[in-house]
Image 1: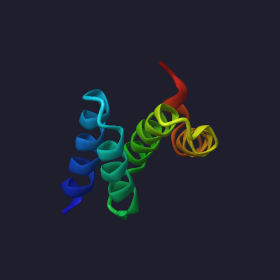
Image 2: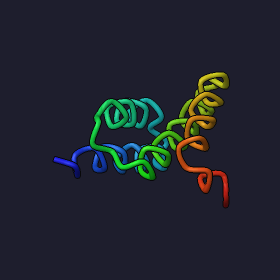
Image 3: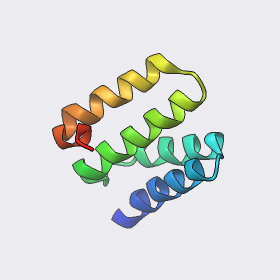
Image 4: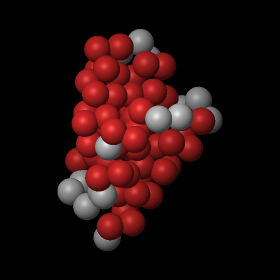
Length: 79
């Protein structure tokens, strides 16, 4: 089942790209609740969820997610 978390995170990213902020948030929340997400993928999912939160003007939560993503994988902050 490790691909399940990755699939949810990827679908969340796709939904964000399509402008479905609510659906993206739901998928990313579900993926991040699962324990089987590799650290790099967890950091990417957190960064993506931060973008969702920014899009819906939840700036404080976006900062929390971004900070955790960088803590998990400092390369997250690199372009």
